Length: 173
Image (cartoon, rainbow, N blue to C red; front, side):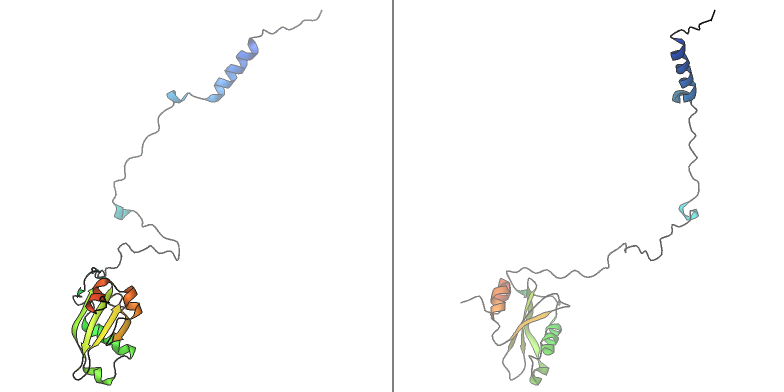
């Protein structure tokens, strides 16, 4: 007679459960807690300085300090407070070739007056008619708009602020 082995139906699942639990290791709540390393006691000077890759530069921390450009209302022409001063306007006119040799003794009798980013100046030389000058731009980078006995050109009439138009007598008619 042959012996038949009969396994109980609950033995196999029990064996699988025991095997899986033993393979999981220790439950997390029973595992030892990791220790926190002590805080460093040295100063930042003790730490080595970080190095940058070759050719890499950091941007400047502070922007270069420069005087802000002057700000003038557009409705009225007022003295430019030296930004620009008359010598800058005179040099601008001389570079343009507008002043013939007789204007070497030219001096400003009016202005520069500023409105917005535009300037109006009147230059005189003994024995000559006054020369009106309209310029625009920042004090260190002026652009000559026009110079002459009548500066009410199309560019001035269409682009200049009201303060310059009034100073140059362009606003009437």
